[in-house]
Amino acid sequence: MNNYVGFNTEHCSLPSNNNIKITYVPSSDTVYYTYNLYKNSNLVRTVTIDGNRLTNIFLDSTGIYHVKLEKHLTDGTVVNETSCEYVIDKEKPILTVGDETLTLIKGGTIDIMGGVKATDNIDGDLNSYIITNADELDFESVGKKRLTYTVSDKAGNTTSKSVYINVVEDPALLFVFQSFILIVLMFVVACIVRYNRSLNLEKRIEKFSISPLNDDKGSLYDSIRGFFKRLINSFKPAFDKSVFLNKLSKKYEKYEDLFELQTGMDFVVVKFITAFFLLFVAACSKALQLKLMGFYEIWIPLLIGFILPDILFVSKYKLHRKSLENDLLQAIVIMNNAFKSGRSITQAISLVSTELSGPIAKEFDKMYMEINLGLGVEEVFRRFSKRVGLEEVTYLTASLSIINKTGGNIIRVFDSIEKTLVSKKKLRLELNSLTGGSKIIVNVLFFVPVLFIIFVSVISPDYFIPLFTNPFGIIMMAFMILYYIIYIIFIRWIMKVRM
Image 1: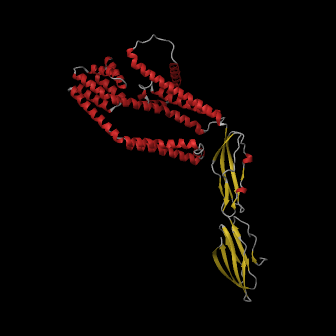
Image 2: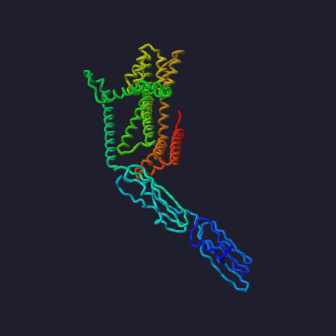
Image 3: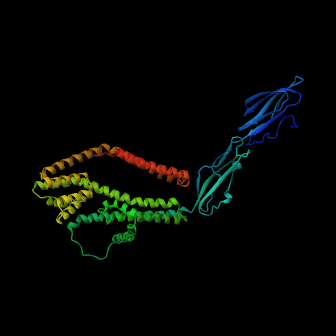
């Protein structure tokens, strides 16, 4: 039984995140009454109750409610009553913390409340009610600290958000070390470029100079190269036992003539040495920061080091093939003129090796040596075609094979080959001029995402950290890399023109 008349007042003006029941008990002389329910000052319901029966009004959504009632008594009088305000707040406060990752130099200070704001739909500004776990964190030790902000409104709704404070050592020492490493690398690259130029100069003037007396003392470059070769030979026996690595080494056999390496397995060993060298450099860099390497900081240098030699191998191989393609026409012209002057195939090959320079001269010199060692002309050209892998050389080898088996006019055949190569070269040059602009645009589009990432990382080093620390960010990063690779493959496939 209710022992009061009128509205219950137990929830008046006290915000609640639960449903509220408003009970109205009329007096005994009530004939009927009508109540109007208001939510946020807007009328939402009108109900008339006959007699003096009590009524219950249930509130279940966020808002500020009050009830206005008109009661008709037995004596004909009308009484108006208004309830107090009933506040339901089921919405959590809005907490804004700004950057999700902050950087703090060890021994420095940071304003943990800078940019932090809390607002509520009912209570308004809640900045003074924000609490943190800063007292539980040790900002004197290097590492990533999780700072949690918590705020509650008067109804009991609570919101929490966390940010990471990365406590690091003073970057001055790291900057000095990185600058030193960069200077050393630039010096090494400059020495390599200078040495390569000296080698090219030595090759050009070698035939005009007298060979010096043998000197037992080797240069620094020779010592480094010798150490590197010994390092490769020490690892190679262990690598030879792996079936997978033996299969992998087969794809590198085509590079053997371009580098001072003997077998395809040597290239595989170089890839592993480069990967572990970059991992060692990364580990030294982290050691100077007094930090341990994370999972991604381990496998990313390994992956880059494993792929980096392939870029060098492929780039040099493409330059080698391009040089062969450009000089092959000259070789055909020289051989054709030699045949017209009455010389044999062997003499024509020897003439090409002496008149030209570069990769094509080395290949023809190798062919001349093979003929002198007893191999037939057809076999020599077949081996030449297999080494270089050019369509024009395959066509030349097939033509010579047919001439050897069925006979024919070799001068006429070489005239036809020469005209075909000239026409193909003209067509290739015209095609390059027509597609040059599109290729430049495509190449720029390839590097724009990379340059954008570098630019943003320089401006805001912590911007991309969530992509490596958050599980969802890691998944997004994997999909972005996969999408970028598919994009490159697809664009190259569209732009590739087969002749």
